[in-house]
Image 1 (cartoon, rainbow, N blue to C red):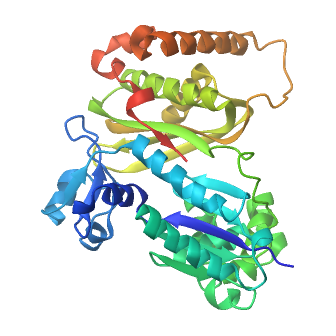
Image 2 (tube, rainbow, N blue to C red; image 1 turned 60 degrees about the horizontal axis):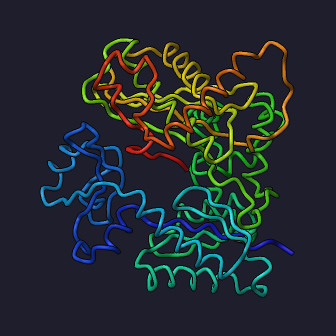
Length: 404
């Protein structure tokens, strides 16, 4: 018997929650936007009305206001968003105790053991209606027999709707879609597939798997399987899965970063934030990602997989700075650091007699975490942050949140 997997994606999550809590905003163009005074004036989320007006996520506020002078901007309130999404997940729990939270606004729900054959679509619509009536937000829900196609379903479903992908309709619904609609296909893989003449999921499904393996390694075989609807990955028991998929942080600085020293100071603060959150969650990660935004608002992302998972501040800083040096571009408006492919921090690993520095850094991190917990973030500072008071005064731990 096929599984019944749903992927529920809250529409315009941050903006929808703001509107649900402030009914006077309903029907008006609304955007969640960072502080303009602190040069964090980037659009983080927008309402459907703002989207119709041409507002896009990542746009700077002055551009958005030029497109839509009546746009209402509100500051982000992560505590509120976490509180509301916890209520959303309680609704999901009424239907299944098997749930994976893909991000703050997306969750896979395994309905296999909770409904009869052919009733999964009715349950998906019921979940969607409860979100609307009990919380005041809408969601796009994808439904299929595997997690990959459920995610595609949520992506192609319109706001406040359900898309059901079955074995009977998959060739008509999924295969004509662009290849990068499918999870696991980023810009580099998309370019590689395009060079091979593969532009749609259907063309990927019909490709020679051996050829894909030679071109993309093991990932080629994974993509081939996904395109053909072969995905046996499980939805985990509620409360037992990894709480987050990645932890990161980014900031727009009070002035442009114009030299390597500027970047390293800000990156130190961000690395401390990410390291502290990883240790709070009791996880560590195998992939470190550095992102930058230039003064002409171009984004660039560079990442590296490390041999041993890490959650130490110094390692995250050093790897992030090496990634910056590999793509060195200046001046910069903002930078970010992220750690992903997370595992339990107590996962066994091969140790070495030559890793005294790593053990020493872990001891420093633990001591700093304890001091800051008892006496506040600024009670102890790294010497590097004293080189620029503006950059060094940033409290990335409390002022900026960025995780999925």
